[in-house]
Image (cartoon, rainbow, N blue to C red):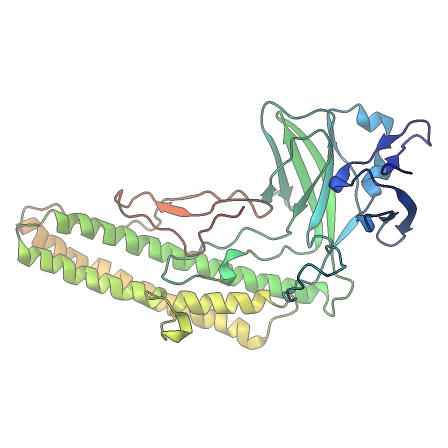
Amino acid sequence: TEFGLFVSIDGGEAWAQFKGSRFPAVAVRDLAIQPRTNDLVLATHGRGIWIIDDITPLRSLTPDLLTKEAAFVQSKPVQQQRIEANGGWPNGAAVFIGENPPDAAVITYYQKSRHLFGKLKIEILDAAGKVVDSLPASKRPGLNRVTWSMHEKPPRVPPAAQIAGAGIVGPRVLPGTYTVRMTKNNQPYEMKLTLALDRRSKFGEADRKAQYDAAEKVKNLFGDESGLMDRILALRGSLVQSAQALTSDEAARKAVSDFDAKVDTVRKLIVATTEGGAITGEERLREHTDQLYGAILSYEGKPADYQVARIDSLRRELGDAKKDFESLVINELPKLNEELKTKGQPEIAPPPATVAIVESVSGTGGSFVSGTVDRDLPANVVSLPANFRLLR
């Protein structure tokens, strides 16, 4: 053809111009289909080689499907979890290579017309029916593609002076069959999605399961660290309020300040309080947890025995910090409250076992803002995790 690529789904009776991936109206001299990947390769005159990844959805289009308001379109029956790796180098502008396929599961759906009113959302459910992730949905008419990172949501990391580099991603889900559910105007549409190991992997599903279980244990450890930090910050917030009310009583203010210093000592067991990491020599429980988490995620085979043992070691450290905090709450706080009571000041309530938080993470498949706010803290005390960020 002279002006782009044209597609027919009825044996050539009618044709439509292909406009996906910003393909230009350029002369197409030859076509080739890669049998294993079902990719369509186009040789153009003047615009190089173009590759349309997986034309299975185009082949799945039928006149009956085009009459539906919305529907999932079958793609590859099994999608591989490609080996994750980092690397590469800057090539500049004079490199004649294209982009690699997305390191994600590709989901294709059709809409007869643009979605205008009501909710439109896409969720991923595991075999037990639990929602493991949510994805941003395009409202455009026609064929739409979204990608799922195949990762769970990131762990909730305690706030600290340093960034938790590994804690910004969640563990990759296990191979298996998942359900993709799109809800459009309260009408659900579903399809099955099967994930498999990369065919190049040197490990099996049992080793992959061992890695996932270890990553989940570290993720839960992050959560327990955050839970303890929530209580510490809640108590310190109450101490700030009490100190502000004792402006005329220096002795009472000092008692509150001394107790706050003891609480802060426990906080420093959990998180680093100065930037610099290994440079400053201040790495605490959270930083060691992050290092272990990153090491386990870096290889999806069975983790080493020492890594599994390290999980138990870090959890014992957290248990010791919890005991120190509970000792302060049970033994030291009542003494402070007795002194405040003699000064006619209200007592400081011990922090609840669980501090209410708000998390605004929409999923791993698209742009989101993640963070936590401790509702029980004063208005001027806000806790954000170290991996708080905005992705565009």
